[in-house]
Picture 1 (cartoon, one colour):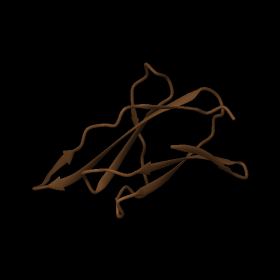
Picture 2: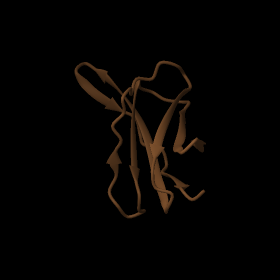
Picture 3: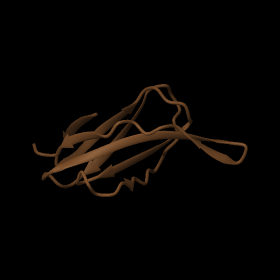
Picture 4: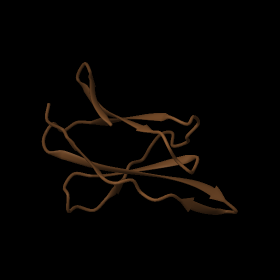
Length: 93
C-alpha cells in the first residue's frame, strides 16, 4: 500500500496479489476502536493475479486502517476468504 499524489488529488494505491476469490471487498476505519466501513467500489472484479486499486482520500489528519478480503459466488452462496491483517496508514504529508 502506498500514498501518492497527482496535483491536488491524494490517493492510496492498494495492490492485491494472492487471493482465492474473483471479487474484492475493502474495509476501512478512521480510529482504531471504530467499527469497520465497507468501501463501495465502482469495479470489484479481480481480472489478473496482481490487481491494483486507487482509493482517494481528502483528509490529511490522523490515520486510516484498511483490511481486505476476497469472495466468489459458488452454488448461489458467497464464499469469503479471511480478512488480511489491518494495515495502518498515516495520512500526514
